Structures are given as structure tokens and as C-alpha cells.
Image 1 (spheres, helix red, strand yellow):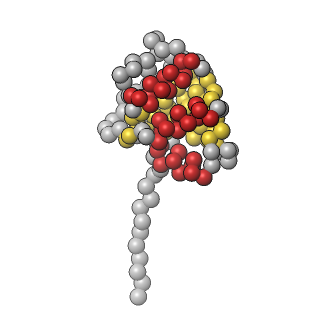
Image 2 (image 1 turned 120 degrees about the vertical axis):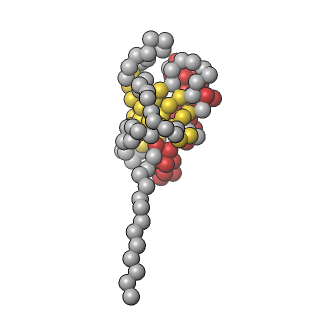
Length: 132
């Protein structure tokens, strides 16, 4: 008697990827490369390697919620996350300057799926980026 079956492997999304990677290894730094200057926002390339900043980014990413529907966005930053095992992950990050608006995170491996960063976490990231 033969029993066969198949399983469907779901692609990793932005949230699953960072959560599973950070359970194995740690983030060593995060780089933001200014992609498209938005007139109302000062946009500069930045790098973060201190524990407090990395924790803010991790919390924002790990609590982001899947955005249903089609995306229509322009990426404010190209964000690269560097891990202690020499792996990197690339995202588009859009925060804008309006403090009542959620942020947007898009894994560059799947730009058709976005994740909403809560207003609270987006404001923490806006504050971090503006003072850095």
C-alpha cells in the first residue's frame, strides 16, 4: 500500500521572516537609505547599531499587521537589517511626517504584500529617525 500526499509551503512574509531569524540570531545594525525625498520630510541615510534603536525597529516590525488589498506606495527608505550570522533582509519603509498616520513596511522579496506599522510605533520610529 502506498500513501502519498503533498504539502504546500507558504512563502515567508515580512513578519515571519524577522521573527524566525531573530529567534536564532540577533540584529547587529539597521541601515536606512533615503529612497525618494518627500517634500515635507527631511530624508537622510542613517545607520543604527545601538540596542535601544534596534529594539524599537524590532517591536515595530514584529507588531506590524498584514495590509489587505493592493499596495500603492512610494518607499521613503530602503531599510537593510544586518544579523549576527551575516544574513541581511531588505525592506521598504515609509513613515511620512503626519503623526496620525500608520507606517508601511514591505519586504523587498514580496513587494505586493505590505504591513501596517501602528501609529504609536510609527511615531517612535519618526522620532528616532528625526533626532538621529
